[in-house]
Image 1 (tube, one colour):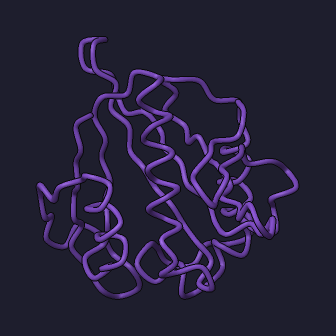
Image 2: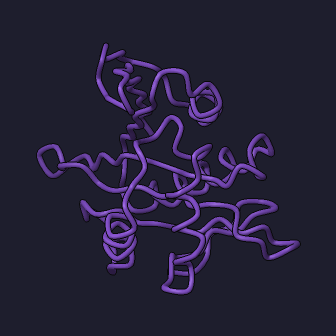
Length: 175
């Protein structure tokens, strides 16, 4: 797959050389605040190895793309998607996700990267999109809404982070 153009950013396939970025994203307290409890290094490595697997449309494992600033070459985070079960072989549905290093929060990078992923997915026949956000993650909700997602469901106590149960917000978008 050739890199995706996202204006001031480029999205390229995750590679073994991105291990330190992936590790930092999955260890950083500010990044994980609305995502999950801290992962062990072994769990992070397993997630990384799974995301290195070759990917094709319809695969249920993640297509993970590294988001890079074109001007500086700095890796800012990851963005990608994985397909959910196809509905009667006519509609592909995918779930999107993204993580960025805190120094790149608020720069519009998640919106640029997600739009690039959505455009790429459309060329693969993905017609429906889903995202799950933990309640309170206002920035992520804004990104999804800017990209055309709509909140369709709130699952009370849908997820546990630490000792607290939080709601999952389910967003959807139809191409």
